[in-house]
Length: 184
Figure 1: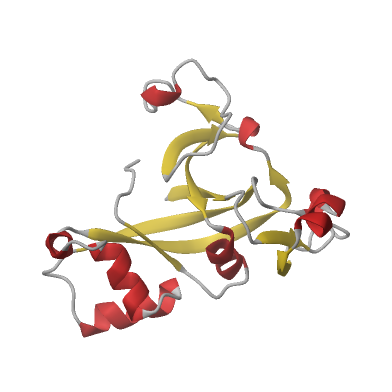
Figure 2 (figure 1 turned 120 degrees about the horizontal axis):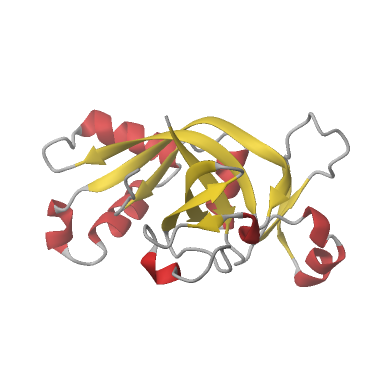
């Protein structure tokens, strides 16, 4: 099965995790929309700019031929998007875009790390990710997703905005919608 690493972007809102008192208890999002002062005081528990979870995943390609009312209902429910948000993203102001496929990444077996990981912990494969050539360790987040290795396991690292990641970590969202995906 394929594996994803979930990276929380640095952008606001800032997300905090419950303090790591019990290592067997997973991180739980307690607050968002906190201000910079609070964020700086509790940085050790902030997850923005860190890799916070791993999961198995399956990719479903959605084309005009496979789109129907049931598919729409399932994608909207799993992605926590409103109908207009999904269509704005898919079409992006160009009606011709509606003929292009998009992808529903189904999250399975989510494992939230007890302690978030740093990007530097990931190794980059120059042959697979040529724009990162010369970097053994990852120094900046991917704009969308990229192949990496962490603890000798091959992953796809995906950047997710903090609001969406909060829903994923709290079990509300099980689908990530993307226009492009990487193959293993």
